[in-house]
Image (cartoon, one colour):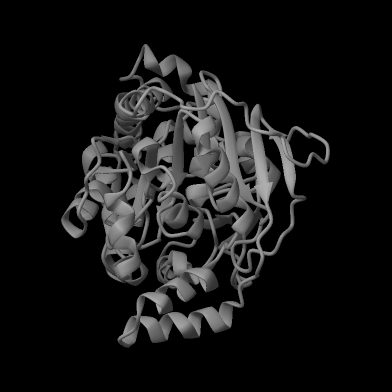
Length: 423
């Protein structure tokens, strides 16, 4: 099969969000299908500035076709326009302008889809909010699959999104929570639906546990030893991985952790990922920065507890990766998705305020038996639901549900080529 995967931005260095989910899926699908990723030249999702060269690229076995954006986003102007559109009566043209201002806006990508969609057996669109999906789904909805990566937020209530969910022939939901929300809020007409999620890799040190699922986790001193030595971390670790951003609940996390640290000073809060807010200069707070995929898994394994403070998530791969390495999760109770993961796996706790945060973190730090039990349950949850063979099988069923004939046998033109590279 020849597949086109459409996403707003794409790159090996883009970690987190629907773009990271898209890359993981595209790389695995490329092992059994011919995959083209159609995307923009943007690296930064704050401005959508063209950073990558336009044309063809090769990243980890996947052909990537990039198209320039014809405008950048002014975050302040867009936020002001968003505030207005959510509070006042407006027209369909106003919503189209909102979509343009949100970005990315790439006429070249849309034109390529319109000219070449028949050269593909299926079109798979990641993230329902952005223009490449909103406009691209209209091109060939009968052979399109949508991966919404959606959660309840003001933007998704705009009228322009009503048609988005009624168009595709297939929908790949990331979680049961997302599926329930979208089916309550929108008219879904897809002929095939799957709750898919994403595959999660077990680190080599945990592969043998497939045969011995009841084996207790390794001692804390042996877990993530390389990460601990590199960052000079010697006591318990509460780890947050992802964007360090007020919108991800990080201001509240720092505030709540200060309350915990006043009474329990032996634990470090370690923040890894892209820093988008100031981090206080405190002995109990450490910034690990942007890490490679191998180092991220080492950090998750080194952690005593992984904290997931974001109130809005569509999947939360860091939580699933934490389960895979046997580290329990402490989640924000406002995140229906992560709370659902914790309840289904019995591998995490969740807090609804400062006092619950402190009490739950203290329990998880101090109770070795509880952590070991949660570690076993988390790994079992991943084995049962998020192995790659399970996830790819669901994608194959969605693809098989689409019309099988490809009207044009013509191979897509390669377009401008500025060299190839492997990231």
